[in-house]
Length: 176
Length: 130
Image (cartoon, rainbow over all chains, first blue to last red):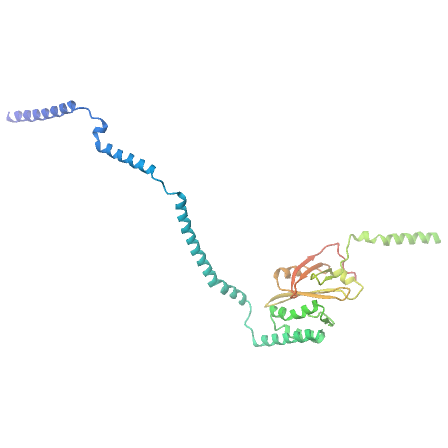
């Protein structure tokens, strides 16, 4: 019996609290959105002010920003070109030199002697304006010990003398 | 009898005169040398068939382990000689394309090096006859 009375008391208390809360909400005045968040209104005002100030402030020209970029780009390009030039300078001549030198065998004593004799033969023949069978045979004997490039270089004075009609060839067969 | 022989002779003469047409169109390019502009030209057949005993075209390519080089030597009917050499692979290739009846035209510099070598092989050029 006592338990039933206490239950009714708790139930009545909860019902009274709920009725009071509901009555308070119903009787409260309706609030406008601005009134509900006065801080938001203030923030909005500040944003609007900032927008106006931003619109009134002269903006930096895009070209000045681009100019800065161009300066930076130029500096980068200069650096890259310097690096490339230095790289080419370091490796280029050495590579070319290697390519030129690679096919050529080391000059032997025999080769150098033949080259010297062939040059002397050409000098003497051009000076004497004579190229006959004896000169041709002497040259043929040396030619096998010369490289292709050396042979062409050695023969150049003879060919130039022939072309200027300063030397008569008197060989019985091909002169060289 | 005399009239018959004349007709036969006339026929033979006409036949002989028309042999050029049977052989097709040919041109004679004996050795030509211009030492001022450093050019020369000619075809092997015309130089070979010439009766002056002076002109010729002589081309040589030498190959060895150290590389290839070549030279051209020509003389005209006046006894003028010119020569040039070459080591350039493109000129060596052109020289290797020559045949016994080719026509050549070449330019050379003051150092005696060939700078241009043109090779032509055509039915229009005279071929060796003997």
